[in-house]
Image (tube, rainbow, N blue to C red; front, side):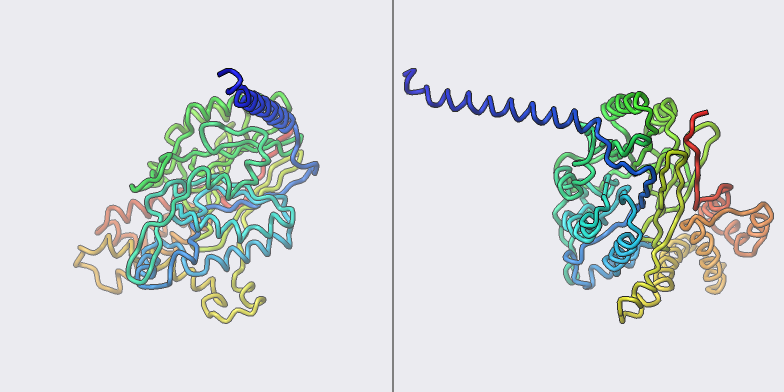
Amino acid sequence: MFKKNKPFKMIMVFVLIITIIASIAFYTHQSAKSNEMLVNEEKNEFWLLSDIHFLSASLHDNGEAFQQFAEGAAGKEMHYQSEAITAFVEEALTSKPTGIILTGDMTLNGEKASAEELSTLLTPLQEAGIMVFAIPGNHEIHNGWARTFAEDKEYYADQLSTEDFKSIFAEGFDNANSLDKSSLSYSINLNDTYRLFLLDSCIYENDVNWNDPTTNGELKESTLAWLQTQLEDTKENGQTPLVFLHHNLYTHNELLTEGYVLDNADEALFLFNAFDVPAVFSGHIHIQDIEEKEDALAEIVTGSYSTENLGYGVLTLTKEQIDYQTRTIDLNAWAEATGQTDTHLLDYTAYQSTVFSKSTAQMVRKQLSSVTELTEKQISNVCAFIDDLNNALFKGEDQYTKEQVAAIKASENYQLLATYSYFLKQYTDSLLTDQTPDQSFTRSILSD
């Protein structure tokens, strides 16, 4: 009996030895990697892209169901997404930044095919040595809204899982010096000056989900514990930590708090401030906005690449300072240079503005649907009035002087809102409170 089982036992011993050797090699590699710096350059530039909400062309036929969906997509442009990404990639290939950081909601509703196609569109960047790092947004993982559209019907689409995400957007995870075991968070030793923390702030199911996705977010207690250990190591190494996540830490608009600001923002802020994090970069609310607090970190929200203008952030890192500026892709110029014939592409700025304005008008008219005292002309004027303010908000151009606010509130359109719609008045008031510039930010990181 013993002799009969001896080959089997020898095989098992051999497998065990191989497993041990592999484990030792893995942990040795990880240990070495934790001290390895990703780049040697003293100046690095990262382009921040957020809330693309990309839908793969393979998931729709431009039929009735898709057209109806696109009409109600809350201002998101749904028809020329591939062209918009291609133009962005070509701009990056010309400028050659160090890398691209995607701060969540890359896909429309977590369709696996959308993530795969987007990754393919970004591949020329990686082939040119431009790194692509990604974290998930609340629309990404096991989203019950994932759909494919055919003629006048919609069907469930394959959902993006955590393993899919790590595989499709692998470069960040492959270059990480540390991975959080309980989420899709990771850190990257960029160079002697900076360590980047790309945090998964989303709440999602661990398996296929048929329900609505969870909009709000949090950093798990286990993630915070991992983060604290990494921040301690960052401090010991004399590096400056920079944080990237999808959800917000600060309230950037009084009506965009629940579901937008991190559920445990106070706990996260306490930790970040304790380790002198100078800035956090996020997305989620689709507006370009910068919030600075005295003697505390700043939060820079990069606006959505799917609404109003094709905006992205440019983060420049040197030994002396961090600098953030906004830029936009000129799709009109790209269309002309590449010989496009579609009139919407050739005048994309006007087309996209119309899409956004229609969404605003839908919201306004819904709120005023039960009001019979207003004429069609008055309603149209109110729509245009709010559209102008909305446009400024999303672009980060919503800073008003006291005199400008007084003039706006004295206008006929504002007075109509004050009389007939409490919500629209409240919404308008929320657009008039920003006092800080939202398109640029600079902070020194030199020690006192």
